[in-house]
Image 1 (spheres, helix red, strand yellow):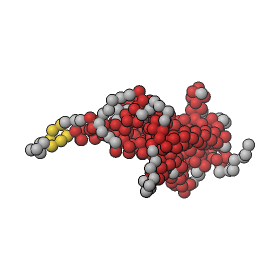
Image 2 (cartoon, one colour):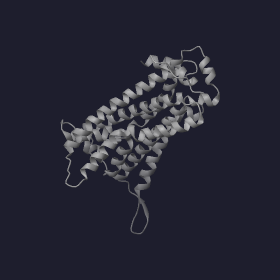
Image 3 (spheres, rainbow, N blue to C red):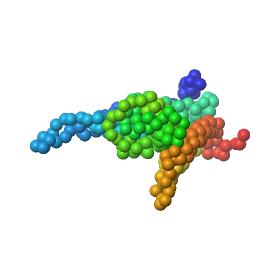
Image 4 (cartoon, one colour):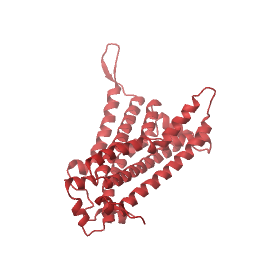
Length: 311
């Protein structure tokens, strides 16, 4: 599989057009440095306090350190949500804007390999970013929220299912919100919390692959500026609705629990929520594979604005 990806990326014209400046080549490293820098700055700012004489002194605490880690994670989540999405939406539209689409269609190379190679040129840099921020996930294993959820892992009951679903299946925004609200300094690390943050990292990699596959598919079908604007509106809207379906289910369960004379136990919520997470992950993988294969199979038709032939 890796040899096939390398071969696709080396296909002529698979690399996105335009100059490869410092940002294009080192965007993941620049973003990772910014994420860690902001987290460190937040931690240092919160560590400065005033005494009774209003004299500033430096007194870092566990809570300050964890606030810096959570801030860095939330910023990294924002980067992963915005930049790969924008880049994937521009991956084929840029050829139309720069006038290189005709040369792309006339090249003797296999066009489906160009389509696949261009996709991996977009994805692999942000996989490097995921590798750079992996220590953030490991650090979250000692946060109050993840540590509490990790302590409940081990038994096949509703509470364990709910704990795993909240850490692994919730969107980046909900997970970051829970880490902020339930921040209480550093807790003891456990095998359960490490396992949960590892699954969280894997699921975020999966989300990156899904969003870029859908974005590349939409980009191949966009030929005008108006269509590009529509795609930029449609994909974030889908990310906030259909691609965040488990969050809406969790909110609905919380709303039902808040009704008068209605009490939902954590075991019941976990039994309902966890299977939805699993089914949703499978559905996302199927969607990404369909978008990836459809983009490669119907690449010529999409780039020329024709209707693809049905197999």
